[in-house]
Image (cartoon, rainbow, N blue to C red; front, side):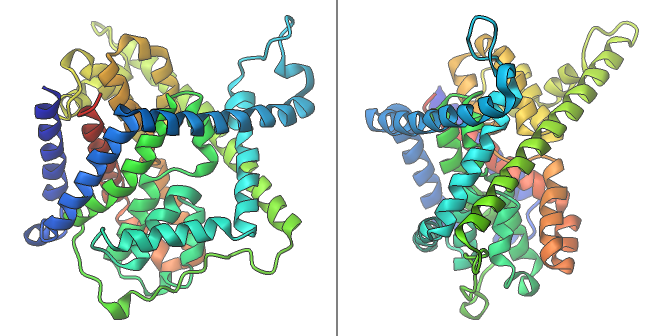
Length: 403
């Protein structure tokens, strides 16, 4: 049954991508690359979710991130003092302390890896490998690897020399990759709310899934003359070690505070909307319940059991209109009510930046580097969210085979 529903889910996702394709006649012109990328997704999902090797690998990564969270707790405890502990000596369960502030420490480590040129070497290596299988140019391959590590804002800095020369269709692909990924600095935060195996699986599958969706939704060819590998993977050149470290620490602080502000605003607004709906005579239903019923058919068609489809649909919609953190917090309150398969599928769906607020973040980041390119991104913003969301839908459908 899992296999049948998985096939239906993938076919349904392809249909949704084809409907809004910029060139429907060429949508499956690179079908060989699509098949290869899909097979890679299935193989990786099997290894990560159904083998001892995958379990050991994810266990090691989770242990590493947990250790980093422990080190981060020491810094947080020094600054926040008694606020981080309860009267019995146990750690206080405060989201800001346990989830958001550790982002600063992870960001600092990324800065060190950038300064020592280790991270750029890894990204370039992955980019070159991806050019062999994606059917796209080097720039798209490099950006896919970079987005998976750096995040949706920082990744465009390395492309600042290319942005003025990029046509709309290539800019769409680069933006979709940024929106479909997550920043390495917040992976540990995700692992405090979702099972580590699903966080890692989603990051890896989204990397390949973006190319699949873009081949259908935004098909094009890149000539050799258009594909110059002119990327600046050392934007911190000329800075001292402590300048770079300080910059990344402050970047981490801005991310943590931005997420905190968005959570306060979005959760409060959703609570207001839920209460408004409950005040409607004859209706004992919340705003999130309504969203769940709207997205319920989509959740079912990609393989979520019908009994869980409304709740999963609600989480999908919450992520789309707010952000992944809000949806993850909602998920933690209902996870035990869902089947194991539903837990796996919604967990991987939530791991990406695909939501409406990301339009402004990406457009603003690009606009800061090249004004006209930023305007282009803003104009295809809705289609960008649509495509990036389909990447998450495809990842969920693939995971459904093995959950």
